[in-house]
Image (tube, rainbow, N blue to C red):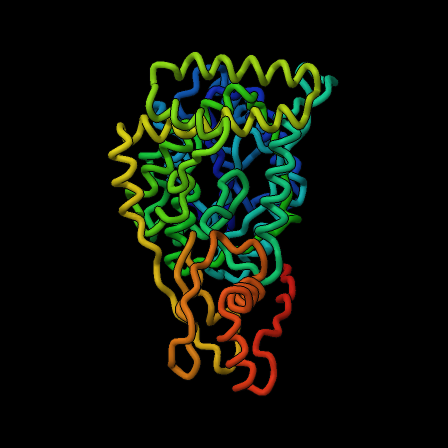
Length: 429
């Protein structure tokens, strides 16, 4: 047992499966961290790897290249189980999850440590910038990789907006830290998530429900050597759908905000979705057709056509996953029927409440908002999905647009507009 002086303050948990080459890059970046030696350890969990990762880690430990490196091998059980095993073995009070294809910036550990110095119940959300490497090296990046990079960049920008309330979809396990006690208190990652995606969102939901505050820090930066192709992305879309079904079954209150609640019916997308639900024998043929069409659009660099085809065939793959998870259209209808819009209430006689008082107003997905003035009901508004803007601005806009009479009454009552809102100041560690 190590004494207090030798106990690290942070454990970096890296799950890995069959990616020895990527893992070596991740370890090299962790070796170059500017955090003082002894303040953090690195714990790699090999999830059934048989590709030389064991030999790689044995060499690193033998050579002492990263003194605080430990590793654990387990039978293949999925990345949720691998991350959870890492936390259980961690020695530090704070855990930082990094994926094995993520290359940490030299100050990444230091930034996460700084945020947790006060011992607050927070989860620090760092960026994972997509690396636009071509295949082979020096070739132009694919249209898919450019699409992925833009999507993630916008997601990181939005979640860091001042005054925006966090959503469970902000919690991405590629670069995130939190107190070990908070992780254990909510039960950790659910090992039932075996495919691509969903396990970090579900854990994020339980953490938010338990009162853990999400803190986006774009300066807690890492590079993500994402090597997924558009073909594997179509397979991933099926797995995302299966994860959504499991998420909605486990947390029915989240169903209203899931993608599978809105069935596309128009145009090519609608036809492909109908085929996904009603003609499962055509799945393989449609997937091959989609891959061929995307390859042609890629070679000709037809960006608009490529994007349209990508979204349509990805929709087919997603709804194929929905059908595989639920079995029948009748089961889908029953699943959708089980999604009720949650009710929330807001009193506007003194204007919009401060942000801290609004945390119970917003829910993860659509909801109904009852607007009252001195306790008297004025209007009911159906709010849209996640507010990707400061929450008070979002609520003010919806009240003015959907219940202008309520806004006028509140203004007259207060003698001034109660909907003047401003962005909350940014915070730094």
